[in-house]
Length: 550
Image (cartoon, rainbow, N blue to C red; front, side, top):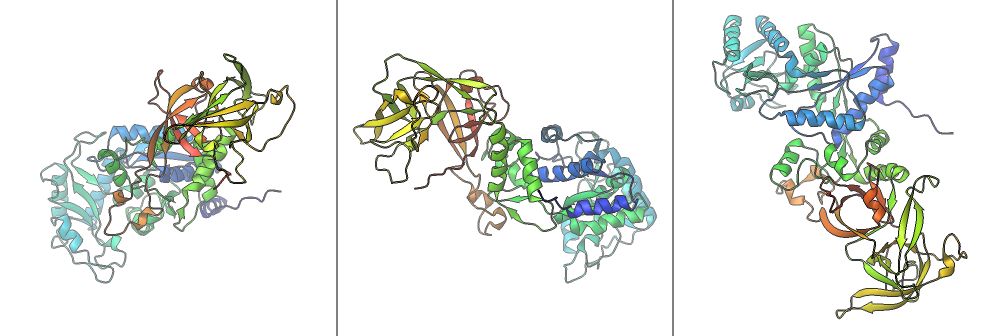
């Protein structure tokens, strides 16, 4: 009997809150900043926020943290919605921090009137220098004791556009000696004369994240504001603003973010890779963006399975990307259609006892998991192509593919025997001359067992395709450990994309599915949007496990 899965710490908190009658139902939110595309780390957050709401009959809002107009764009707003829908989630309300700019401004004036905020004329550099350190207290701003009347006037003048960028900021007046550096008079508003994608030119002052986030949660009555662990130090300030303003008591909870080997998930660095041409775009299949892994052939089901397996914890850890690939394989193995493809540098295989011009058609299931389901027809002739890795002239004892004098079954068809090896002037094998055993037809012949089965395509019917073979984007497993004297781009993998020609059985070109297919005995591949009626382009999603090792 399968052991019942234990609740994670967030589920325990929610169940305790509901049992105590603290809430009638829960409301979570997903709050991306529209300054880039969502990545695999966001997938974990999405699964947690939407998954908890679904489990406990609540709802999840999508709220854009659009407080930095110089870095945000409608392109990212739309892409984020597309990615969330692709994962299979639907938000209850679509909201923006900019929806609440008027209310946030009103609360800022309230803080000024209560002597809890002031306008500071120091530069950002001076503010940073005067914050002190963990061991030493900060230094009060020379403008910290301005009168309420002067602060209100200056803040309103900031709002009216009287001052240039960087001339003044509004700061909370808390404690410059507080042991939590976040409380040392944090900045609430800065001047930024920039066009906003939603509010246009109405505002030239914009609220900071720490001032915005908790209040937006409160306005929406978010019961459980769930974010990643690096925001735990922000939580006391989150609570301070809510308590000081006397508004709905939303509360923040933190979980460990998703860190994967050979991957980085910094939007700033991912943007640099795009802008400097190290990748073809945000949806490059090597990128950890959701649009990138979607183009590569990863499925929503596989991502959700992976997030479920790694669970929810309070401790950061580096997860092996092979675990994600295993989930992709598990999902695709159950659902993907199969086809035979050879690529790169195949070997010609000639059946010397095959009648010239004869074509025999074999029938095979599109998916072995559904043997009674749809079938595909495969043409078989006397001239074939096989994978070069499936022949070895001086083979070790446990090599069960083709060798001189050896036999294998050509998948779905006959057993063949290698009678002669043909080489070119440089000694490279260019042709295998074989005989087939007509008595080993899989449906009507006599059963005879051989240990090896290899895939093939008919030369006359094979369709040439382009195969894009993707590997890790970086060569360093833990990208958080880049040495100080190195740049993260020094670890870009020069072999992360190799383009090879391939030859496919003709049925592949008419595949009706919208998920990756399996190239039998090779791996999973997804049709790329670059494909044209004249040329099919296939992206390698992930490999199959290979049982033979030299």
